[in-house]
Image (cartoon, rainbow, N blue to C red; front, side, top):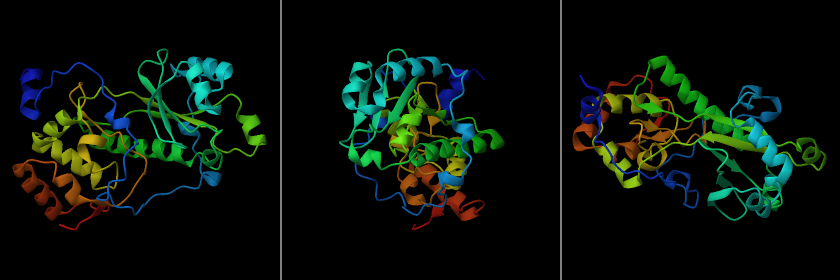
Length: 274
């Protein structure tokens, strides 16, 4: 069958042409329907996270080195601006989500070190996000999932890492993330309402392991490449309320979701309050 026809059968096509940034909006309160019980936490003092460090042959590495050596963007918001970064999302005294014209296809996440609360952080926030993405990627590869993806995530050490360490600053990491070409939030809602059984089964395989987030339109939005992307990997593994994901599905798929839960299998990641 023609690939376009198959896509129509799986999900409604979308025609919007602009890249949106709602999924990077951190100016919202935590969703109370996402359970707070974390199943996987790491202590970076004795955890080998070297596999997450960006390699020298990464396409963004040379540009990152140039920008961070010349402008030291981690130091302050003004340095970020001088380096040519565009702030997509920010909250006072916390993470900035950034884009740059010379880093097409990527976003950066960082905490400016001149803000007191950020000087007290370590790099756990970045390692957790890489580990969360790795967990999802492992499931996708093992089960050969076709409709759900996860962006690549890497940790970049700033060039003045040693100087920051001498100052007692432990958060000298920048998170580099593949930029996903997603549709508007309203279109992602519609996409999930029209998702097929095949898509819902793949979603179950991810969430039932405690990976990603059940707030589907915001945290697993639909992309213009025709797939759903797991953007939220902040917590590598946690208990997830099954009902939160269910509410975004069509009545027919809600029944199928209930069947998947009833039939059991791997449900270690679910808190079931239905």
